[in-house]
Length: 118
Image (cartoon, rainbow, N blue to C red):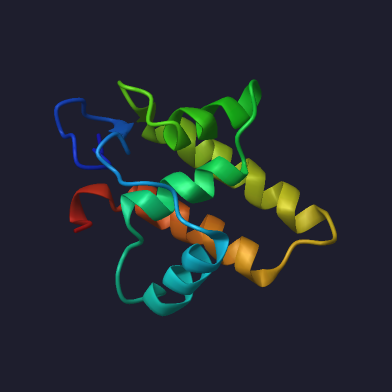
């Protein structure tokens, strides 16, 4: 199982408990643009992107657990499934920008490459 985030005591989960404050959308988009293909986004950036997609139920609850730094983390598989469904929703609706898609792509990469992040 992949451990994502700085807390490696709970394998198979994503964590942002040690992350700093959420970022602005401009900061997120800048980080995504400048790190694409070079470096992973930070935990703070991942938590911010997740906050854009959170809600009380369904996939939104998965994003909410990550963005609100819920102790215990989020199962990697659950987060990847939620990201995939969000990407499909994004692809099927007008009004989303390439930056929105890039942010979700970067969140997916952050999730799958967990231990390799700095």
